[in-house]
Image 1 (cartoon, protein in one colour):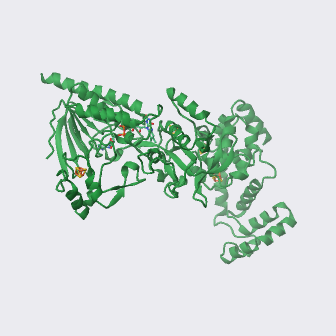
Image 2: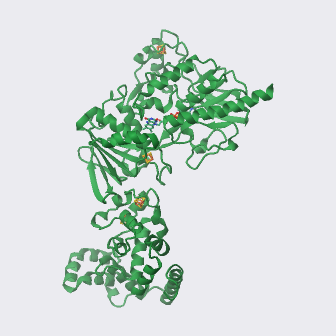
Image 3: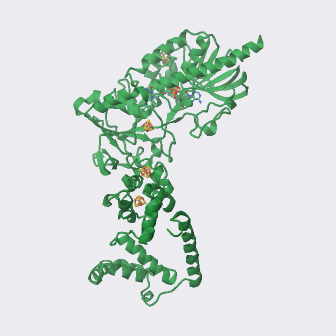
Length: 427
Length: 212
Ligand SMILES: Cc1cc2nc3c(=O)[nH]c(=O)nc-3n(C[C@H](O)[C@H](O)[C@H](O)COP(=O)(O)OP(=O)(O)OC[C@H]3O[C@@H](n4cnc5c(N)ncnc54)[C@H](O)[C@@H]3O)c2cc1C
Ligand code: SF4
Ligand code: SF4
Ligand code: SF4
Ligand code: SF4
């Protein structure tokens, strides 16, 4: 049975992405007791799935590593992975949280030696790579995963693979008897940092994401660009593995559209500019890039980055939201539309189309496990009716990392104020 | 007709957009267009037009009154609804296109030789007689729209279609002699008269002040 030491001076953080980690660490480093609940088997959230960060084009692994080290060193922080909050009862300063823990089948003895993964045979779609690659049924979610502990896919439990994994482990780290658990514990304030998810591209019917192999999303493109990713960092066409030198980026794919997401996802213009540099880095003068847009939104200090990308002769900016995509006989996606500057029709073939997919809240508004005020897009509002529950980062809005982290720090401060007043009342 | 046009120009001197908003069906939506281009790219016929819908909306905002109201493009919409289902701002594009055509007609600005406008008038006149469309008469009228010789050619080309329509009962050769009417033809005309009254009242409200 998992035991959690907590009181109503404890801060519960839900979601261990960059926002949740930041809020948890900021609070824990002021001496508050913090419980961090993360659904995935590891921390870092969607940032861990990015290849590089705009605007500096540095690697997210760097910032994540610092946060992981801070987490390891802090005695005030309890981290629960493969865990979800299923209920929250009570009021500001006096809550009781219910958390469901899914079995990992691997305990703290694990040294991440990898022998279990070698021993098993069954393969599954790799969620870390958005399904672009496969992983084994015993796996480390990604090379820098924290906690650095393997996971057994529940689908292999009861199959010979599970026995093979167990037999291969020299550290007695595999426990096939682990069960799902539900625990509850008190807390005084909650930071809700469950982040975002990419909009379902298949719903944008005219773009044929579900019909054409060479139409992919921006989150998949991040994985493709990563040298440790499913293609070893090669930018290729999923249909035939040929180099993808002619790339189209389609902006506002799912965003700013009353048929899909109402809001502007704010980061996808910058994300596409960044991804243009991936293509230029890979193919230099041979790269041919078209960015199709309604308008380009590189806010405040990002303007410089945009100007640099814009200056590259191999990147064309076309003011047009494409109407549809078809596929030619070579499997090349053909982008159709009308250019707003001159109203010319175009039908442009490319090796690869990248949909700059919109960000929507990760938690479905219809099944939010705690009472909370959401706006019409499903993001959490800053409302006094939320009591001691404060949103942080992507759960509150479509934000880049810099803004998500600032927002998370603000949420930590609000939560600290709540538990401080609980502490004063108890003296 | 020419008078109404002059009156409207007087009244909305500086803003064609305001004129469209007040007088064209669904015209108040025009300002919501963000010029993304999806409708133009989606229109199956747009490539044959002078101005795709998106450009028409921009021209309205730019005050290009004559160019819009005399444009052939607003008469070309086939109501396929491709644009409406895709427009990210949910503009009722099809209705606006028809609304503009209708408004141009009221003002007497329809391009003289526009075939769609001609056909629409024929359809209307045909419908008015018996309260239902006489396919045979309408078809014949259409064939001979561009003169007798042309008509024979078109009719021969479409012989098969005509035969098929007769076989399935969609067209009856006897309809050439008078043709049958709706049950309550007088009632039908009353309905239309009432509709015209309502429409006139609406126009009076939005249009130029009495006496203008
Ligand atoms: C294509 C693309 C490229 C981008 N590139 C950049 C970039 O270069 N620079 C930049 O600054 N930003 C970039 N961003 C934005 C960046 O990804 C976000 O700012 C960042 O992920 C926000 O972090 P977060 O912690 O708020 O949310 P997330 O990263 O979504 O983390 C949320 C965490 O909560 C967990 N969670 C979800 N639901 C639950 C639940 N019910 N219970 C428990 N845990 C839960 C998730 O598993 C996840 O770990 C990019 C975005 C996209 C789409
Ligand atoms: S579970 Fe055992 S075999 Fe697998 S990585 Fe951990 S220590 Fe190695
Ligand atoms: S950031 Fe750019 S691509 Fe993303 S929704 Fe806004 S305008 Fe569209
Ligand atoms: S699709 Fe809608 S918003 Fe886009 S240009 Fe056409 S009318 Fe305007
Ligand atoms: S409804 Fe009319 S304007 Fe719209 S796509 Fe069809 S033909 Fe074009």
